[in-house]
Image (cartoon, rainbow, N blue to C red; front, side, top):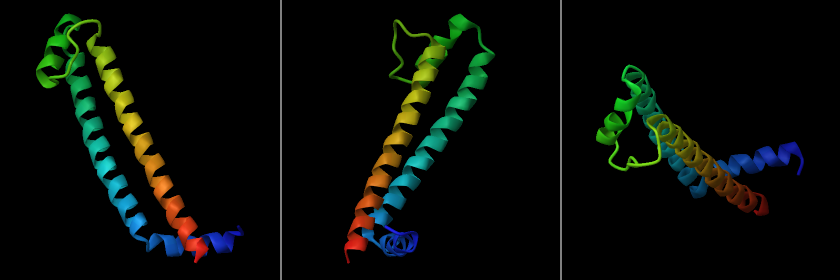
Length: 109
């Protein structure tokens, strides 16, 4: 598909209901991830001031799903960050899939 046809199809796809759903989904995921990352940054800063053996207890008070055995506070924070990256990646993949569907439908018209 030449570039000019692609850009024309992109204009048509941007008016699609699918695009609107993708935009709202990406916005919601971005707000969630941004808030989560800010919370983790603040928590990491406050945890760095605590002794190593007190960090797990502090995290247990903040996160009810904190594992009781086998994971240190630093590992838990790392796993939360990885979880956030996974959510961001899945959101990106879904948004690209929705935009691809919208582009294919727009170019078929």
